[in-house]
Image (tube, rainbow, N blue to C red; front, top):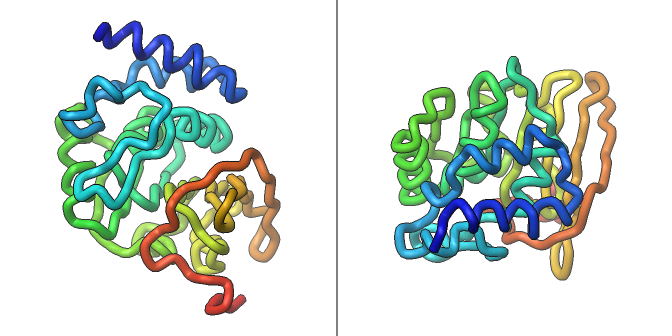
Amino acid sequence: MNIENARFNMIEQQIRPWDVLDLDVLGLLAIVKRENYVLPEHRDLAFADLELPLPGGSSKMLFPRVEARVLQELAVKKHENVLVIGAGSGYLAALFAHRAQHVTAVDIDPTIAKFAADNLRNDGVTNAEVVLGDGSLGWPDKAPYDVICVAGGLPVVPQQMLEQLKIGGRLSAFVGGRPVMKAQIITRIDDKQYRVADVFETYVNHLVNAIEPSRFKF
């Protein structure tokens, strides 16, 4: 397989048709080597329109088109600090790291957290760190954040997580349940107000320990 042809085809045939037209985002997808963030046995599938499995088999990477759309919608800037909940392969963290000041990626699974950390280190990404922990309510240790990207599904977005955003900060999340979820961008307007934009529909597996609506308290 010609890697560069496969990367080009991913961008032109999967990413652009999904309304990802930001040239900076498209450029990043060409620069950050997705094949370095998949399991070795799936290297030839790194650019396929698939949710590739992560170590252990219970979790998956997002579709490339979903990763790209989230990256575009969050519009991360060079001075911003980013939290990724669900480190996965480390690929999303790497994409954000090329645009942000610093990225913290949290994962509850030690095998996946190590996989992500190893991939980032091997790819020479120095402004992203992976921490082991439960991010279902956010990660207050380094809050507030300019951007929070939730890479798994949430039945509802916990208020504790929203409160970890700076004023003007943005949070992306896949909200709801089967058969489809809404990908939302939530912007913090002030101490108490948030603006919610539904940007597309998809389905992803819920985060481990994600709060169910019946247990959620405002």
